[in-house]
Length: 88
Figure (cartoon, one colour):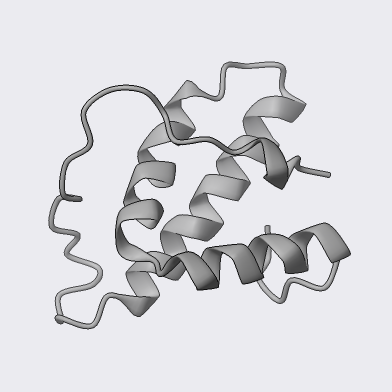
């Protein structure tokens, strides 16, 4: 599957994620989770097709900016163990 251990922050300047009209409220939990899913879907799809995964960097930056580290670690552990509830 995906090598969650090899995930490293991309190089370059980090900025605050832009406003996403799908998540207008102050509570950004769904935004965090959706960007985590989008990142892993992007990686999976682009790797399978033999394309560069550089466009997936955006999702990585957003979820790393919004999500608590403990959640990301937990989700990565669940993916590694094959018990993650989200559809990737």
